[in-house]
Every structure is written in structure tokens, then in C-alpha cells.
Image (tube, protein in one colour):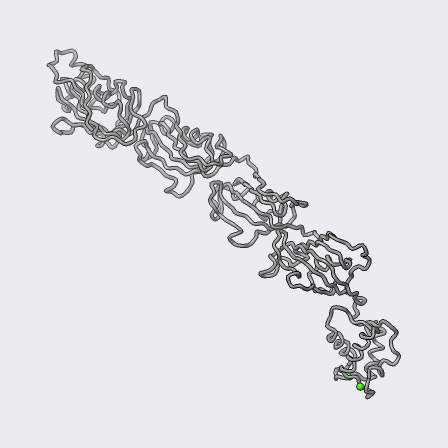
Length: 582
Ligand SMILES: [Ca+2]
Ligand SMILES: [Ca+2]
């Protein structure tokens, strides 16, 4: 695009304050010219060609703006007389305040950042008929190839433009918060001077207390986590006339493209938000309890860092004993089984400034937890009777043979096992160690027909180890049981008892063929006959053959496979002292 502009034909002295040395001389030269009869000057026209115009031009130079630009100055024949590029620094000046030659003051008006103009300045708007000794001849037309890099005005404020805002913005940055953010920092012309992304590390800082340049201290306020914002900071709220290092030149406007990742205040405690509460919550966790829970752990911006689900295993711990980060220790209190909660933990109650593993330093952590179960090591078995028959007088006791149905579940409702699916009862001798201790307790003092819910803590169930593939480690178990049959057991320690008086000729009675020896067959036949006749009883719930075999071995003192009368008597004598079964 070519634009031709005319300017007012004014010849006047330009006070030059910030122009390089060579132009400072012009003050004297030009003022000298006015005292003389100047020869006629050539056409007084300022010519401007826009050689490159950026697509976007949010702002153009106005009078009173401060600009930074590069220029290459030459005569119409192409001879260079000056260039900012040679010095490696932009020329920085207020526009329209007579700080530069008039032609340039006019030529800069309306320029955009990254716009390039070829400016042809007549001597009347430059150095007149005197020129500059040894540099600019009299009546020289000057060509400037100008590239504008920066515009700002002393009245500017920090500009913020949010271009992405997450739907959920419950909290925004306030003074004295600690924030973590990523940014790309560019100059106004787009030159990147710094990027936290390139360092692959967030910028972490307190805000509003002077740790940042003033422009950022205010420009970041009000942001929410996940928000993306462009913050444009004029140099007087940034690095001013000194710049910063080699990357930020003096008087540079800075543009920060920021995404906020994390936000907390050192005064924060944890926040705990109920996501789901089961209808039935009779008991809540307290310090000292042992809890099993699932969790998803994310950072405040949603970045995942850990999940118990991915390990397919609950996280199990005591509460309130410092086994977990202090924020979690607190967050795990007053929870119900089945409850879902979101616990947000500031870094000073989590992994602090150091972080750990995938958790960066000073990170706020968000745990979405599901309570699977909990118990206290002091818990006993909890028994709730669901149904009691009207006639409930014969109560189960140790040694009784019980037949019952059960449904076994975990606290979260996961079904472990059920006798109903097999269509037959589970049968045990109570107190004989055939079931876990908690079940032995849960089946006590129960009558036939009664229904109970029995809750068994792991130390009375399957313990810390659980049962591989069936019962999770440290799981609390729920048994819904129904007692269907009860066969009274023998007195403690007995495997056989007589219901009636023992025959006075016991050896002879057993020795059926009367040969003075009793082999196992004769012994077994005799005991079974007594049981069948109701004269004696074997302990219920055990293998009768095994009991009889054990009884026989006790009598057969020398283990030769036959019981003699001598052995029988001897044994009988001891038994009277020991109170054993025969
Ligand atoms: Ca015999
Ligand atoms: Ca013998």
C-alpha cells in the first residue's frame, strides 16, 4: 500500500532532547539558519509509504504516546547517514512533543506496532538549509525506513483481556494469595523474552505484595484457576527505563499470556465438599479409625496425579495418626461409608513447597474420595437381630452344630458369597474354629429361625491379609444370617457321651466274638449301635468314623490294632481320673 501524505510547510527549530548526538547538533544549526537569509527550500512535503502493515492494529500512535522504533536513515541516493540498527537499540521517544525533527514527529502518527513506513522528510521538516556538519548537507531530503516496535502512554494502565474462562470459577486471585501460573512473555512486537512453558515449570509467587512487577501484581488479580488472560503492562509498571537483562529492553511494554494453574492462601485450611451422602449414615469416621477408601487425585487445574482406582486397590490407613498428609488426616474425619467427598488441600497441609513425584511444589491437591469402609481396632462384632421367632428359648452355644444361610457383602454392597446361590446351608460346629472369630461370635445365643445382621471388623474377620481374590485386605464384612437348624453339642471337650448308664460289662459287650480282643470293627459297630439306639451321642458336626477311630486309638494303648481287657481296664481307670469320654 502506498500512502501519500502532505504536511504543513512549516520551517522551525526542533528542540531535540533524545535524538542521538548528531541530531543534537541540529538545535544550534537550525537556530543559526533562522538568523540568516535562507535560500529557497525545495518542496515542503512529507511523503509516507506504508511498506508493511500488520493485520491486527489494536492501537496506533497518537500525539503524546511514547514509542520505540528502529530506523534506517539515508539520503535519496541511498547513502546511509544513521541507523538505530547499527547501535542495536531502538530509538525511544515521546511523539508530537518536539523531541525529534518535525517530519518524524508527524510521520510516526497513526503507526501500528510492527508497521513499517518509508518516510521522506523535506529539509524544512528536518535540518533545513544548514544541515548537520559533516553528516547532513544543507537542504537534504532525508529518507527514514521506520519500524515501530512499541507504543504506550503515561496514562496507560495495566490491560487485561480474558480469552478463556472455565465454567466453574468459585474462587479468584486476591492480594496475598499464592499462585502458580504459566506464561509466555513477549514484547509488544511479539518478540518472546521469556516463557515458563519453555522451562517446563510454573512461576510460583505470592501476589499483590510486591514480589512481582507492579503490572503483574495487579494484572493477575481476579483470575480463576484455568483462566487464560493477556496482561499488557506498560514499562512504568514493569522494568521502566532500565529494562531487564538482555531480553527486556528499556521502556518496553510487556505482554504476558497467562494461564493460572493453582491458587491458595497460606491461611487456607482444607475444604471438604460432600458430593454424595448415602441415606443411611449411622456412624462417622473419627480419629483412630482405620479407613479404606478410593480416591482420584488431581491438581487444581484438573491435572491427574494419582488414583487408587488405577491400582485397583483401596487406600487403607489409620485416621488422625499422621500416616497421611495432615490435610487428608483431617479430611477423612466425619465420613460415612459410601460417602463421596471432594477434599481440597492447600500445599502447607500436603506436600509443601517441595512437592513429591508428580505433585509440583506448592500445589493445591484435590482428592475425590469414596469411603469403602472403616472400623476401629476396638470394634467388636456388631449384631443386629432382624427377626426373632416368638419361641426363642434354645440358644446356640459352643459345640452346637448349626445350619444357617448367609449373604456376605462388603460395606459398599459388594457381594462376596451367599449360601443361597448353592441352595444349601452352611454347617458348622460353633466355637470350633471352623469360621472366623467374628462369625463365631455372631452366631452365639441365636435360636432357630432367627435372622441377624452381623458386622465383622477385619481383626475378627480375614485380617490385614484378606483372602486373595475374594476378601480385600482389612475389609469389614457384613453377614446377613438365618439360623435354620441347631443340633445341641456335647459338653465342652466331649466327642461321645452316654445318654444312659454305661453297661457294667462293657468290654464283653463290645467283644462280640468273645475272643478277648476288640478290633476297630467290633468297636465301631458297637458305638454306632449305641448311637442308633439313642443310648449314646457323638459330637454333632464331625465325621463319626474319625471320632470313633480316635476313641479306639486312645484305648489301644500299644497301638497293635486290638484292645485287650487289660488295656481297656487301664484306660478306664485313667479315664475316671481324667474324666474322658468312655
Ligand atoms: Ca473280639
Ligand atoms: Ca492293644
